[in-house]
Image 1 (cartoon, rainbow, N blue to C red):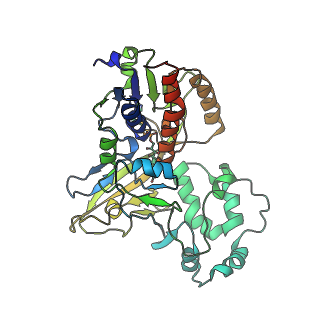
Image 2 (cartoon, helix red, strand yellow):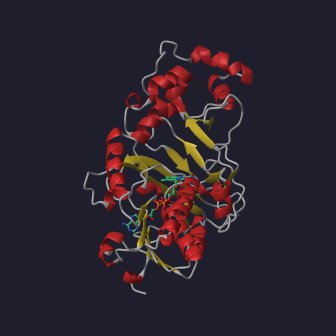
Length: 384
Ligand SMILES: Cc1cc2nc3c(=O)[nH]c(=O)nc-3n(C[C@H](O)[C@H](O)[C@H](O)COP(=O)(O)OP(=O)(O)OC[C@H]3O[C@@H](n4cnc5c(N)ncnc54)[C@H](O)[C@@H]3O)c2cc1C
């Protein structure tokens, strides 16, 4: 089939695109063309094996699948089984390791005390800044809730490194979202289900895209062959929304990450998949050690791989996280007004919706688009 023959075209083979391609091929039974500009499928979930050590890693940053959405859970398990990995994060401060988010272990260890859960509130009342009654920004909110010592140890420089902005310019509401636990619970997520695909993320995408009616073209930028696609095709676009409209209102800004890989001559470097480095003394924010994501696997005992994570504003073509500024929201609204007027185009996913979606959100969104967007379109006979 020629590109111009396809009635269903999906731009992007990340989770948003792959789920929709799978649904269309298997439920509508029509050929689907998937265009992917990178040299691999899977978008930012892509996993691969390190050549030297055989250790599987997530090339765009550690991905932990977690959800409480039964529909999403039942859907994704058609394409993979999950291991029993449970995500726990540690944070390094002045050479010592603490549990994170802050819980009772963190507080006891940090202050050298031995509080019980019911004593935490009274203790925190003594370390909080009582002068801040109406916190106006991230820093003031933190000082009013956890006091200066914990704030400076775990949040201040981490936030500066992550966002490259003074925390006093960030809204107080961001700090509200960060958990603070008065017990010893150290599981990062509270979802019902959690794990890593036993055979890796890339295998999940191979399974999602396995139907013979799906054709994937790698290293293919949609914009290079846009003119060859049928005007009445049902188009699923999961690239950046501003790019779709040729940036006519301006560019959305993104935060991105850079990873520095190192192979080390030991079995285990840090004893955990992720350790935060919130201090000003190093420029990276975290170190990932992917062997810990697969406790069920036997990896080499001679070597391990680690990735130091650096956060930066996206200057090129690698958008990761949307930045919630008023200007970005203004631009997004303009683009979205145009997007809803396109009769047979669905702009979606993390890049298309300009929203931080976890994987389970992305799947839920694609299932929703299929049911409430693509199927009604077929019924209305816009795409055949
Ligand atoms: C560092 C990081 C860590 C994360 N960790 C977790 C986690 O632990 N748990 C969790 O649930 N979620 C996590 N996420 C979120 C998760 O990655 C997303 O929910 C998911 O990948 C979104 O899928 P997507 O298809 O919308 O976007 P993407 O994965 O970005 O896929 C979009 C695809 O479209 C392609 N594309 C774009 N433009 C074009 C074009 N013009 N032509 C052709 N192809 C194009 C891109 O190359 C890409 O492959 C994390 C995200 C990041 C960035």
